[in-house]
Length: 548
Image (tube, rainbow, N blue to C red; front, side, top):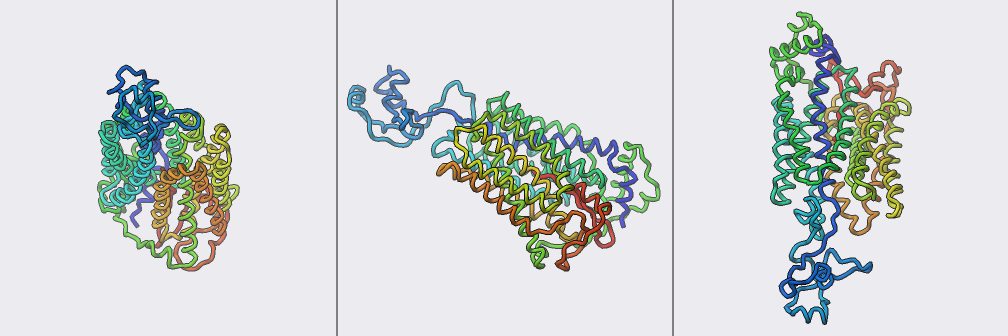
């Protein structure tokens, strides 16, 4: 045995060193929330119409109202059409006024927007009419970046270390985030957003790994809860920032540039002692452990440091192991489905704040604030009602709320927004439940494989969610009907899973029986958001990770 676990206990579970480390890692979480939802405030609804300046050639003295009256058709309500115009003709002004124009066509010379409107993605890149769908497509491109980042930076951090990957991710997020403010074309904007998404994934994954590898087992749920709440605070901060800065380019700079401040304290950010030991860099591990103990005002017995040896890698299970056993097949498919539908309804609601009818800034503020009690309350719900009931009920409630929204008239925005906030509460709490529940369902030898597989399903749902919003052009209820029906199905499927509260953990993939019940004291660590098992004679710990 390497002895790293015993040394970390001597250093202290959650001393001053770990507290500063967690504090340092919270700052990037604010930027994560900004990039996740900032585009919602960069594409406001703006009145517009086709550019019909062609008539100025024959009628230079026309007023604006006269020009619009001659060149734009009106809808049934008497309002000028935004998607079409009368076809240009080679007549003189007298003939146009006398006979009028009848033939219509789509806007061919661009669009005209109110001159007093601050610059936005919509006005600068003409995200209207046939180009309107690019808004939701670009959100999917960003989510694709999150997916790619998790596949790239996760293995990279295991290969070259936590600190270098954090540094690379922070640099990319700052560089491309600020670069977005200067892009000349919307397709360049989407490419930059994809890179920012990948860097966000790298930052969140690696920083969380670094923090949890230093924090003791008993205090890890506390550290994870703090990161969850910081992400929620970041959403609230976004509402205020976007309210004060309406120019989308300035808003992008204001939300992206502060991440460069991370470089000023990257030098004090330690490398993971556990990672150093696994790579055989024992002397470096000893130095950083001694520094941590010194800050915590603790002393490491010299004998413990001398016993520090490179860890022997334990053979873990593969993805195929999850499908070779019948009982694991069921657990894997249902939990992957639960993560997928959970992410679908979470982003389905979060990316729809502009369509609920109330002020988008207040709605975003409420959406961020409601996540804090949702994350905290999840801990108590798991203790009182168990894992299965909590997971199933929260998913069912998330879905039912969305289905109810489909039947609310458009002239009832307050009711719609209140229901959406309730849905955001249940979806957020359900996510926290998923991390604990899925960790306890899977055997130790394939638990880390599960850690990658289930969140991957959630990332795929994040890519799909913005595209589902495009179906709203056929009927406004279609997207919410999908976001509602999917978690209802997922919640019903969760009823088929075994309860894991008060049970011992399974170490191998053999057998199909549910875990054996143990006393509450023996399982108290599981109740607090982490689980502990045995693997090859050594303690194997699992810590729930945050989801962004």
